[in-house]
Length: 103
Length: 184
Image (cartoon, rainbow over all chains, first blue to last red; front, side, top):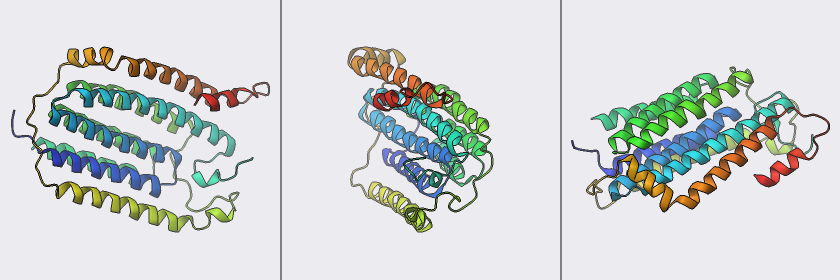
Protein backbone atom coordinates (compact mmCIF):
# COMPACT_ATOMS: atom_id res chain seq x y z
CA UNK A 1 0.00 0.00 0.00
CA UNK A 2 1.37 3.35 -0.91
CA UNK A 3 1.33 6.09 1.68
CA UNK A 4 -2.25 6.91 2.53
CA UNK A 5 -3.38 10.32 3.58
CA UNK A 6 -3.85 10.38 7.36
CA UNK A 7 -7.25 9.92 8.89
CA UNK A 8 -7.54 13.59 9.84
CA UNK A 9 -7.41 14.62 6.21
CA UNK A 10 -10.36 12.43 5.38
CA UNK A 11 -12.26 13.82 8.36
CA UNK A 12 -11.40 17.41 7.41
CA UNK A 13 -12.56 16.81 3.85
CA UNK A 14 -15.76 15.34 5.22
CA UNK A 15 -16.26 18.35 7.50
CA UNK A 16 -15.76 20.73 4.58
CA UNK A 17 -18.29 18.85 2.49
CA UNK A 18 -20.78 18.86 5.37
CA UNK A 19 -20.37 22.61 5.83
CA UNK A 20 -20.89 23.14 2.10
CA UNK A 21 -24.12 21.16 2.29
CA UNK A 22 -25.32 23.08 5.35
CA UNK A 23 -24.51 26.39 3.67
CA UNK A 24 -26.43 25.24 0.60
CA UNK A 25 -29.53 24.61 2.71
CA UNK A 26 -29.40 28.18 3.99
CA UNK A 27 -28.30 30.00 0.86
CA UNK A 28 -30.43 28.44 -1.83
CA UNK A 29 -34.12 29.19 -2.17
CA UNK A 30 -34.98 26.32 -4.46
CA UNK A 31 -36.49 23.13 -3.04
CA UNK A 32 -34.65 20.79 -5.41
CA UNK A 33 -31.26 22.38 -4.75
CA UNK A 34 -31.93 22.19 -1.03
CA UNK A 35 -32.56 18.44 -1.37
CA UNK A 36 -29.26 18.19 -3.28
CA UNK A 37 -27.53 19.94 -0.39
CA UNK A 38 -28.99 17.32 1.95
CA UNK A 39 -27.43 14.66 -0.27
CA UNK A 40 -24.04 16.40 0.00
CA UNK A 41 -24.31 16.27 3.79
CA UNK A 42 -25.27 12.59 3.75
CA UNK A 43 -22.26 11.83 1.60
CA UNK A 44 -19.96 13.71 3.94
CA UNK A 45 -21.21 11.51 6.77
CA UNK A 46 -20.70 8.42 4.62
CA UNK A 47 -17.09 9.39 4.03
CA UNK A 48 -16.59 9.71 7.77
CA UNK A 49 -18.05 6.27 8.36
CA UNK A 50 -15.85 4.61 5.76
CA UNK A 51 -12.71 6.42 6.95
CA UNK A 52 -13.29 5.43 10.57
CA UNK A 53 -14.17 1.89 9.60
CA UNK A 54 -10.94 1.63 7.65
CA UNK A 55 -8.95 3.12 10.54
CA UNK A 56 -10.45 0.64 12.99
CA UNK A 57 -10.07 -2.28 10.62
CA UNK A 58 -13.76 -3.09 10.92
CA UNK A 59 -16.38 -3.65 8.26
CA UNK A 60 -19.19 -2.01 10.22
CA UNK A 61 -18.53 1.40 8.71
CA UNK A 62 -19.27 0.10 5.25
CA UNK A 63 -22.43 -1.64 6.48
CA UNK A 64 -23.69 1.61 8.00
CA UNK A 65 -22.99 3.37 4.71
CA UNK A 66 -25.18 0.79 3.01
CA UNK A 67 -28.04 1.67 5.34
CA UNK A 68 -27.45 5.40 4.99
CA UNK A 69 -27.68 5.06 1.23
CA UNK A 70 -30.95 3.16 1.58
CA UNK A 71 -32.40 5.87 3.79
CA UNK A 72 -31.11 8.51 1.36
CA UNK A 73 -32.90 6.76 -1.49
CA UNK A 74 -36.14 6.66 0.49
CA UNK A 75 -35.71 10.29 1.50
CA UNK A 76 -35.09 11.35 -2.09
CA UNK A 77 -38.14 9.48 -3.34
CA UNK A 78 -40.51 10.86 -0.72
CA UNK A 79 -38.96 14.34 -0.80
CA UNK A 80 -39.24 14.61 -4.55
CA UNK A 81 -42.82 13.37 -4.43
CA UNK A 82 -43.59 16.11 -1.91
CA UNK A 83 -41.86 18.65 -4.17
CA UNK A 84 -43.99 17.51 -7.11
CA UNK A 85 -47.16 17.75 -5.04
CA UNK A 86 -46.21 21.23 -3.80
CA UNK A 87 -45.35 22.38 -7.30
CA UNK A 88 -48.74 21.22 -8.57
CA UNK A 89 -50.35 23.14 -5.76
CA UNK A 90 -48.53 26.47 -6.14
CA UNK A 91 -46.55 26.37 -9.40
CA UNK A 92 -43.45 27.40 -7.50
CA UNK A 93 -40.32 25.87 -6.02
CA UNK A 94 -39.58 28.78 -3.71
CA UNK A 95 -39.84 27.60 -0.10
CA UNK A 96 -41.39 30.87 0.99
CA UNK A 97 -44.34 30.19 -1.26
CA UNK A 98 -45.44 27.55 1.22
CA UNK A 99 -45.75 29.48 4.45
CA UNK A 100 -49.46 29.07 5.08
CA UNK A 101 -50.88 26.01 6.77
CA UNK A 102 -54.20 26.11 4.93
CA UNK A 103 -54.63 26.72 1.21
CA UNK B 1 -1.44 12.18 -4.34
CA UNK B 2 -4.76 10.78 -5.39
CA UNK B 3 -6.53 11.72 -2.17
CA UNK B 4 -5.96 15.42 -2.70
CA UNK B 5 -7.02 15.21 -6.33
CA UNK B 6 -10.30 13.48 -5.49
CA UNK B 7 -10.86 15.72 -2.48
CA UNK B 8 -10.33 18.86 -4.53
CA UNK B 9 -12.75 17.60 -7.17
CA UNK B 10 -15.37 16.75 -4.55
CA UNK B 11 -15.11 20.12 -2.80
CA UNK B 12 -15.09 22.12 -6.03
CA UNK B 13 -18.04 20.23 -7.48
CA UNK B 14 -20.02 20.55 -4.25
CA UNK B 15 -19.36 24.28 -4.11
CA UNK B 16 -20.53 24.63 -7.69
CA UNK B 17 -23.65 22.60 -6.86
CA UNK B 18 -24.83 25.19 -4.38
CA UNK B 19 -23.64 28.09 -6.57
CA UNK B 20 -25.41 27.00 -9.76
CA UNK B 21 -28.61 28.85 -10.63
CA UNK B 22 -29.72 26.01 -12.88
CA UNK B 23 -30.74 22.81 -11.05
CA UNK B 24 -29.85 20.62 -14.03
CA UNK B 25 -26.21 21.68 -13.79
CA UNK B 26 -26.41 21.25 -10.01
CA UNK B 27 -27.46 17.63 -10.41
CA UNK B 28 -24.75 16.90 -12.99
CA UNK B 29 -22.07 18.50 -10.83
CA UNK B 30 -23.26 16.49 -7.86
CA UNK B 31 -22.75 13.35 -9.95
CA UNK B 32 -19.16 14.48 -10.52
CA UNK B 33 -18.76 15.00 -6.78
CA UNK B 34 -20.08 11.49 -6.12
CA UNK B 35 -17.62 10.09 -8.63
CA UNK B 36 -14.76 11.73 -6.75
CA UNK B 37 -16.11 10.35 -3.46
CA UNK B 38 -16.25 6.93 -5.05
CA UNK B 39 -12.56 7.25 -5.85
CA UNK B 40 -11.93 8.12 -2.21
CA UNK B 41 -13.77 4.97 -1.15
CA UNK B 42 -11.50 2.94 -3.42
CA UNK B 43 -8.50 4.58 -1.72
CA UNK B 44 -10.01 3.54 1.62
CA UNK B 45 -10.15 -0.13 0.55
CA UNK B 46 -13.91 -0.11 0.26
CA UNK B 47 -14.63 -1.20 -3.32
CA UNK B 48 -18.17 -2.34 -2.49
CA UNK B 49 -19.10 1.11 -1.16
CA UNK B 50 -17.46 2.70 -4.19
CA UNK B 51 -19.53 0.53 -6.51
CA UNK B 52 -22.85 1.20 -4.82
CA UNK B 53 -21.96 4.88 -4.64
CA UNK B 54 -21.81 4.94 -8.41
CA UNK B 55 -24.69 2.57 -9.06
CA UNK B 56 -27.20 3.77 -6.47
CA UNK B 57 -26.28 7.40 -5.91
CA UNK B 58 -25.02 8.55 -9.28
CA UNK B 59 -27.06 6.07 -11.23
CA UNK B 60 -30.42 5.94 -9.49
CA UNK B 61 -30.96 8.79 -7.05
CA UNK B 62 -29.45 11.49 -9.22
CA UNK B 63 -31.37 10.30 -12.27
CA UNK B 64 -34.51 10.55 -10.14
CA UNK B 65 -33.58 14.15 -9.32
CA UNK B 66 -32.91 14.86 -12.98
CA UNK B 67 -36.30 13.45 -13.96
CA UNK B 68 -38.05 15.68 -11.44
CA UNK B 69 -36.09 18.78 -12.50
CA UNK B 70 -37.04 18.21 -16.11
CA UNK B 71 -40.62 17.24 -15.23
CA UNK B 72 -41.16 20.48 -13.38
CA UNK B 73 -39.35 22.64 -15.97
CA UNK B 74 -37.33 24.00 -13.07
CA UNK B 75 -34.37 24.92 -15.24
CA UNK B 76 -34.55 28.57 -14.39
CA UNK B 77 -33.92 30.16 -11.06
CA UNK B 78 -36.86 31.46 -9.09
CA UNK B 79 -36.91 35.24 -8.84
CA UNK B 80 -35.30 36.49 -5.70
CA UNK B 81 -37.38 37.68 -2.84
CA UNK B 82 -40.75 36.81 -1.45
CA UNK B 83 -43.42 35.57 -3.84
CA UNK B 84 -46.45 37.75 -4.22
CA UNK B 85 -48.85 35.59 -2.22
CA UNK B 86 -46.65 35.05 0.81
CA UNK B 87 -47.13 38.38 2.49
CA UNK B 88 -46.93 37.05 6.03
CA UNK B 89 -44.84 39.09 8.45
CA UNK B 90 -42.91 35.94 9.32
CA UNK B 91 -41.03 35.94 6.03
CA UNK B 92 -39.99 39.58 6.05
CA UNK B 93 -36.57 39.16 7.73
CA UNK B 94 -35.76 36.23 5.44
CA UNK B 95 -32.76 37.89 3.82
CA UNK B 96 -31.04 38.46 7.13
CA UNK B 97 -31.83 34.93 8.22
CA UNK B 98 -30.29 33.55 5.04
CA UNK B 99 -27.12 35.52 5.62
CA UNK B 100 -26.95 34.47 9.25
CA UNK B 101 -27.50 30.84 8.32
CA UNK B 102 -24.78 30.92 5.69
CA UNK B 103 -22.30 32.44 8.14
CA UNK B 104 -23.28 29.84 10.73
CA UNK B 105 -22.58 27.08 8.23
CA UNK B 106 -19.18 28.59 7.40
CA UNK B 107 -18.42 28.86 11.12
CA UNK B 108 -19.43 25.23 11.55
CA UNK B 109 -16.99 24.19 8.84
CA UNK B 110 -14.16 26.27 10.28
CA UNK B 111 -14.81 24.88 13.75
CA UNK B 112 -14.81 21.30 12.47
CA UNK B 113 -11.58 21.80 10.58
CA UNK B 114 -9.92 23.57 13.48
CA UNK B 115 -10.95 20.88 15.96
CA UNK B 116 -9.78 18.08 13.69
CA UNK B 117 -6.52 19.77 12.76
CA UNK B 118 -5.63 20.38 16.39
CA UNK B 119 -6.29 16.80 17.46
CA UNK B 120 -3.43 15.48 19.53
CA UNK B 121 -2.76 12.03 18.27
CA UNK B 122 -2.37 11.31 14.63
CA UNK B 123 -4.65 8.62 13.32
CA UNK B 124 -2.95 6.27 10.96
CA UNK B 125 -4.59 3.53 9.02
CA UNK B 126 -2.79 0.85 10.98
CA UNK B 127 -5.30 -1.97 11.15
CA UNK B 128 -6.08 -4.39 8.41
CA UNK B 129 -8.85 -3.58 6.02
CA UNK B 130 -12.04 -5.48 5.33
CA UNK B 131 -12.64 -5.03 1.65
CA UNK B 132 -14.08 -8.35 0.51
CA UNK B 133 -17.71 -8.26 -0.49
CA UNK B 134 -18.32 -11.74 0.90
CA UNK B 135 -17.29 -10.62 4.40
CA UNK B 136 -19.60 -7.65 4.13
CA UNK B 137 -22.46 -9.82 2.93
CA UNK B 138 -21.98 -12.30 5.75
CA UNK B 139 -22.04 -9.48 8.29
CA UNK B 140 -25.08 -7.93 6.63
CA UNK B 141 -27.11 -11.12 6.84
CA UNK B 142 -26.06 -12.24 10.32
CA UNK B 143 -25.33 -9.39 12.68
CA UNK B 144 -27.30 -6.76 10.79
CA UNK B 145 -30.08 -9.01 9.52
CA UNK B 146 -32.80 -7.25 11.51
CA UNK B 147 -31.74 -3.80 10.29
CA UNK B 148 -31.62 -5.19 6.77
CA UNK B 149 -35.21 -6.41 6.97
CA UNK B 150 -36.36 -3.12 8.50
CA UNK B 151 -34.66 -1.37 5.60
CA UNK B 152 -36.74 -3.34 3.14
CA UNK B 153 -39.92 -2.24 4.94
CA UNK B 154 -38.63 1.35 4.83
CA UNK B 155 -38.13 1.13 1.08
CA UNK B 156 -41.63 -0.29 0.64
CA UNK B 157 -43.18 2.48 2.73
CA UNK B 158 -41.20 5.14 0.86
CA UNK B 159 -42.31 3.70 -2.47
CA UNK B 160 -45.98 3.65 -1.47
CA UNK B 161 -45.64 7.12 0.01
CA UNK B 162 -44.04 8.53 -3.11
CA UNK B 163 -46.77 7.05 -5.29
CA UNK B 164 -49.52 8.39 -3.04
CA UNK B 165 -47.96 11.84 -2.74
CA UNK B 166 -47.19 12.35 -6.41
CA UNK B 167 -50.56 11.06 -7.60
CA UNK B 168 -52.87 13.56 -9.22
CA UNK B 169 -55.60 14.53 -6.84
CA UNK B 170 -58.89 12.98 -7.74
CA UNK B 171 -62.06 13.81 -5.83
CA UNK B 172 -62.70 10.39 -4.23
CA UNK B 173 -59.30 9.91 -2.53
CA UNK B 174 -59.74 11.99 0.57
CA UNK B 175 -58.22 9.35 2.85
CA UNK B 176 -55.07 8.63 0.87
CA UNK B 177 -52.99 11.56 2.05
CA UNK B 178 -53.95 11.04 5.68
CA UNK B 179 -52.87 7.39 5.82
CA UNK B 180 -49.59 8.26 4.16
CA UNK B 181 -48.90 10.92 6.78
CA UNK B 182 -49.27 8.28 9.45
CA UNK B 183 -47.03 5.80 7.70
CA UNK B 184 -44.24 8.25 7.21
